[in-house]
Amino acid sequence: MTTSLTHFDVIIIGGGASGLMCAMTAGQRGRRVLVVDSSNKIGKKILMSGGGRCNFTNLFVEPENFLSTNPHFCISALNRYTQWDFIALVEKHRIPYHERKHGQLFCNDSAKDILAMLVAECEKAGVVIRTHCEISAITAQDGDTAHFRLKTAKGELTAESLVVACGGLSIPTLGASGFGYEVARQFGHSVLPTRAGLVPFTFSDGFKTVTERLSGLAVESTLSVPDAAFSENLLFTHRGLSGPAVLQLSNYWRLGESFAIDLFPGEDLEGWFKDRKKAHPRALLRTLLADRLAKGLVLELQVMLWPAWAETAITDIPDAALAALAGELQAWTLKPSGTEGYRTAEVTLGGVDTRELSSRTMESKLQPGLYFIGEVMDVTGWLGGFNFQWAWSSGNAAGQFV
Image (cartoon, rainbow, N blue to C red; front, top):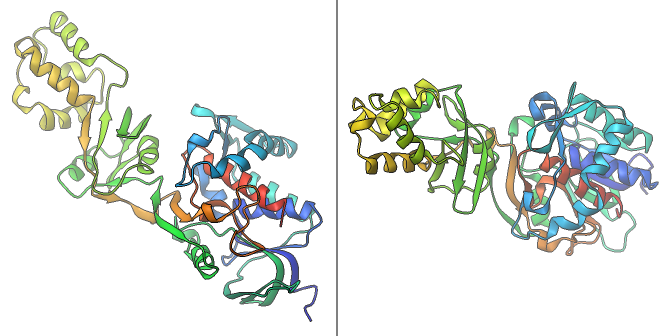
C-alpha cells in the first residue's frame, strides 16, 4: 500500500516552464501534484532566457508563429490560454515588464521574477517539488488507481496521471536530455526526427575567416529561404553567423541548403546606384557603400562581389554590371556547413508526434493518463516569446484535465 509521501494524483516530469504551469493549474483544481526534476534546481531555462530577463511571451501570437508537421494542433491550446492570460498573471504578481520590437515582452529586472511567480503559485496550490530526482523506470498498470509507477533515486512513486514536461535536446548543460522521447517510445508513440532550432550557422569554407574578421558586427537585413523570410539583425561571430534573423531562419533551413541575405531590404538599390553615378561620378563603389554599411563589411564584400571594379569610378562601370551587383547585394547567397547544434540551440525541432495526442487535453491517444507538454512535442515557436507561450498554453491545457 502506498503512503501519502509516495502517491500523488499527478506526477510531472520536468520543472521547467510547461511543467510548472501544468502543476499550478492542476494544483488549483485540488489535485495532489508532484514535480520531479533530475537537475539541482528547477526553471534553469527560464532563468537564462532573454539574456536573464526572460522574453516570457509576445503580444502577437498566431498559429503561424509555430512549426509542426501537424500545424493545426497548437490552435486549441493557444486559444484557451492566451498571451493575455499570462500577462494578467504577471501583472497580478506586480512584475514590471516592457515591450521590445515585434511585440516581445521582457521582465524589467530579472527572469527570476517569472520563476518566483510560478513557484509561488505552485506553493499556494500545494504542489510538491523534488529536485535531484532521476527516474530509472516507469510502468503503467491498467485498472489500478496507482496507474503509473516510477522508480526514482528517491524511492518509488505512484500516480494516476503522468505528465512528460522534460523538454528536448537543446542546451544539454542545463540538463536537457532525450528522456521524454524515451518515455514516448516506451508507450508506443512515434517520435519525429529532431534537430537544433533557433541556432547560429557555422561555416567551414573561406567564409569562416570573413566572419572571424567581422566578429561583433550587426547588420539589419532580410534573410530568406524559399518558404520563409525574416527581417532582423544579422550578427557576425568568430564561429559564423548569429543574431535574430539567423536564429529565426535556422528553423526553416536544412543541411546542404543555401540562403539569401538582402543587405538593403525594401530598397531599389539599382536605382540608388544610378543616382550615385550622376551625383558622384568619380567615386568608388566602396566609398559610396561605406555610407550605408560598415566599412569592414564593404571591404569584404568588395573582395567577394566586385573585385574587377574595385578601383573603377562608378561612372565607368556599365549599368548592367551595377544592376548585377545590386542583385547580388540584395540576394547575397551563402551556404552554411551546419549549425552550432544543440549546444547553443534555444529549442528542439521535431519530437513526439502530435497526431497521437489530444489537442484539447495533451493526453496520449495510446496510453490513458499519459500527457505530453512543452518542447518535447513536435511544436516549435519562433524566436520572440512564442516557445514560452506554447509552454504556458500546453501546460495549462493538460493541467485542466490531469
